[in-house]
Image (cartoon, rainbow, N blue to C red):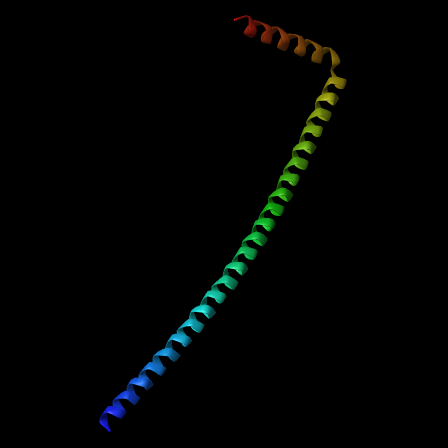
Length: 107
């Protein structure tokens, strides 16, 4: 009778081990699937953040370019206005600057 109970205990242990293996396989699969989902979500989040950062950088670049254009246009307008106010003085200054550049380039 004891041999039968030992065999029966052995069979129960064997069945329990098989159930444990099955549960472990299911758990491993569930964790792997969860990780795949997390990676996919993380990838999408990174893409979104990258797009947002690029959009923000473009907007700031466009703003800086607009400011630079406005400043350049204002500077050109100011120079034109000064030349219109004193045309003779402007011609003399340009002539002197030309002489100075010519002397520097001769060296």
